[in-house]
Image 1 (cartoon, one colour):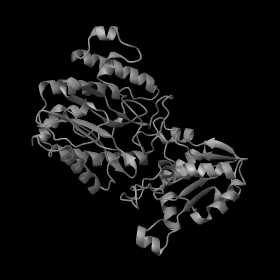
Image 2 (image 1 turned 45 degrees about the horizontal axis):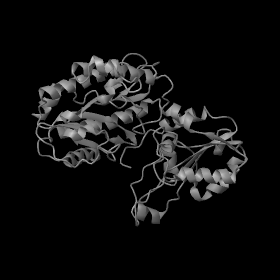
Image 3 (image 1 turned 90 degrees about the horizontal axis):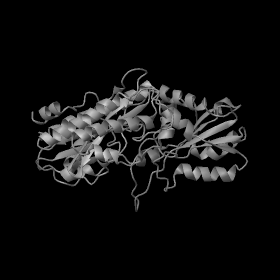
Length: 430
């Protein structure tokens, strides 16, 4: 890992929050991700499962966390099982967590090697009636690929058919959505790294550069600041490509007169940042580009103020739709007849703004959270309105990351990243 060690109090606190919502006479199990193969002996870089990381800070493969708060054996109330390290592994793969280092990372005193798991786990299961299994219930999840967690669940169902099964997901969706001060600091670090990268490319972008060259400049700044890289697949979309919402080819040359849409963000310590800026390739917005840009910015500024405790996200998105409708009327992209004849399930503004405005952000770019419950202080959201006009080869989206406060407007983790037309143009032409 490239990041600095995280205060273990974060993970101690997170486990307490999870355990407080467990049923009695139950335990919960969380597995690391696999190292996924590509072909031959090639593998993808390891990415830790966010749930075991959230609860332990352990950031290596073949790790298991078991929480059994009602165990009569006190040493088994929190247990980590880790891949045993030795000199051979250290030479070939690098140093793995020792038992002492695991305590410093997670604050968990009881650590066994993974080879002891079946024996110890059988003892732990004998003391409980139910087990919490960690299934992926994110609404946008693709669950085709079998994970280490999936294999574990299959085995538990066979080995312990008399135990009741519970779901960890509802608890995690609730507690992970509220960010602690330590988490907000980590997210701020990710956003600060993203800011450095934006400042770098504002001086780099000009007619003739290629989208992948911009991607490379961003990656350089991320890595040099202890980030693993992009928090998600970067979008570097110039001209007409900016109207393709998930354009990731990043293989076109940037032309004079085009606007380039950058949807990029650094990760830090597994925490995501998610930023979008739309920049004039030649350093100067045209009158029309500026008009559309400022309309998007107007919607964003007004939408941010709606992210307050008690608001339902469904209502929030409807209100943002009204804000966008007003701006599209000013831009003469829709008219009152379009609104009068619109389908209530697909309003007229959706022709030019077809995606949602905000999603949870944290350990995942599209983080866990409950969309059918009111917004609470401590939740973190993106705010990312956009206007896409294919007939003008123009797509504008602007996005920042925000933390909901107990009162007033949310705190903008990206509040010092250039966003106004004048400051963007000034920095690009220095």
